[in-house]
Length: 116
Image (cartoon, rainbow, N blue to C red; front, side, top):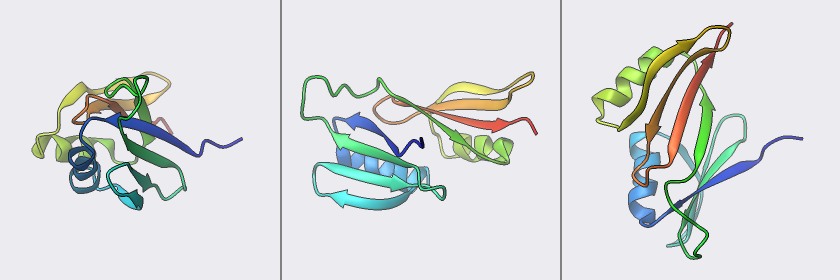
């Protein structure tokens, strides 16, 4: 099995899309006007941003984990851009380093750099 994608829900698709595209630098794969935007990563995993349409589609209640290299550099870059830091950069023994941010809808994106 391989995870294909995860979806965040939003009340403002343009604002959320702009954040993930322009601030985070995620690559746009697909746009369905006023409904959905898909971002793709080099390993083919995807994060979708969907305009809230149904009652169960609650913005701010999702978390995605993204593995990165040079996590200290990324943490500094996102701080400089004014991105809301949810959890400061820390290291867990035997696991590696991690920190978390919140997108405009308060969905959490956790960045991890596994111990090598």
